[in-house]
Length: 295
Image (cartoon, rainbow, N blue to C red; front, side, top):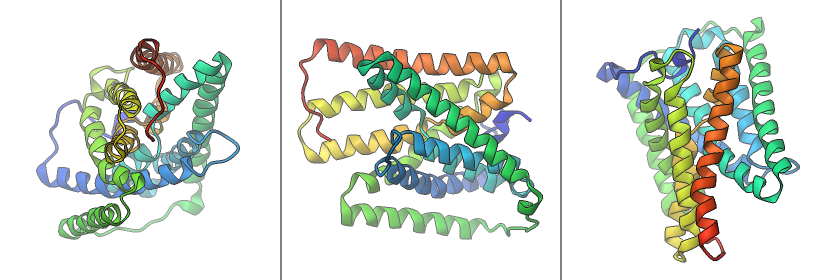
């Protein structure tokens, strides 16, 4: 099975409008949930670096959705859960920025973080895949499809997130509000995955663009003092960049590709991301006097 099934099966936008509406609704709902899970697992983590926990959770869940026959019979739900939920729980851009900062302290720290994230994410995916394939979890249930009901639920979810932001003015709520737009862009870019048989260029582009943006937003946070502006860029880092880039799909692609191509894809993706961080953040650090980050 080609990995692009999880997000797209071609490199052109040929989705009927009604089907596109369903997909955008599923993406909005599950993207909001995914951001909330990532925020609260990252910032409340102990023992291991916080960036690791959401990657484990998202990769484990996508393993279940990838192997369970129930989701095969409900492709829109599977799409929402894999692309929307798992893609928003996990994040490639934050992982790369964190890796670059670890490299600055010690090269071994960076390499260990890469090994932990990739290794634990892949292991979690395999465990999820095994659990999802067990007979006990093969549920035979037909979920009724109602476009109007789905649109209403999506509207309610997004309004609730908006109200959460209005009454809290927190980076968590604003990140959740912004997150779906990063997911929409990742979904669009996934349409280009079919252009190269052994290199998912759409996912690669989403991850590298997300890394470029997160590095820029990270720098901006050292150059501003306004708390409102700082809140906005922190939400862009967590919400937009976090949802634009993904580890879960990246892991499934590594699993799906031929072994040699998988190693090449993994190495090129991570090396390109770190190089981007080195160029953007590294040059800025070398030419700018150190200041405090606003967040």
